[in-house]
Length: 60
Length: 252
Image (cartoon, rainbow over the protein chains, first blue to last red):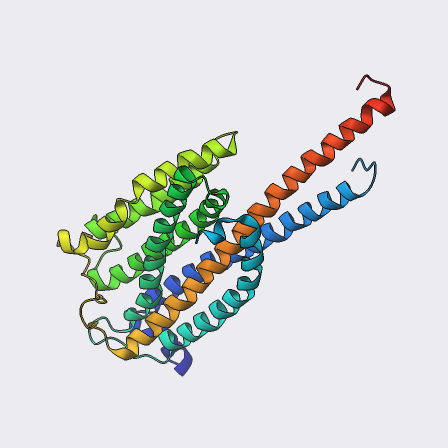
């Protein structure tokens, strides 16, 4: 067994440790990406509406 | 806290806090991963599976902290009608639910090699599962009504009633001696954990707390911006209506 795979095996517990970290990473990164996407979209919408209100007689 | 309840002030302060929190979260989580996965020893009983604890325990703390915050928001919204409380509750619930899910999944993955089973209906495990369902209930109730304020009110009541589960989770390991071991870190005694293992635990916890606040702030700001956009859209539509009668010759 190579050094790397031996390290990753974590004394036989790798099959539990890596999925635990992987699941946490997927959930936390997913939550962050979703929050940022939501924030960017909402701020863009608000800005567009502000612009629409500023332009006279706009019907967009 | 009361001064933060003003949405304008919240916007200003949170815009300043967000980059700091995101940096803290990135640095501390990276350090926590390094300490937890590489620079700490295996446990003499748990072996390498102890590394799961460095996410499991902080995630559980945050799941409980998030729910307490959710109940506090519910109380502020119901009793004092704070404008920001509903926004914050809506921002917190999915983040808290995520941490409850991480607590359950990582605990389960630790339980298999340690206890020999992924799941038992132990008092601690069951009460955390209920916490997860309370979060889901809050999310569902928030979205269940056409009228947003009614949904927020119903969800707020659920959050307040459900907070009884928080002390049950906390002391479940002492009240019912089933499978889950009692806390190793308490305020009144020296922790029963070696510093080499406390370090990754606390660094990761600090990083995840920073992450929690950062994502809650992002979600709250998004909600405020979305509400602003809706209000402005009504204003724009109202003005368009005012324009139409003149253009179409309808009576105003």
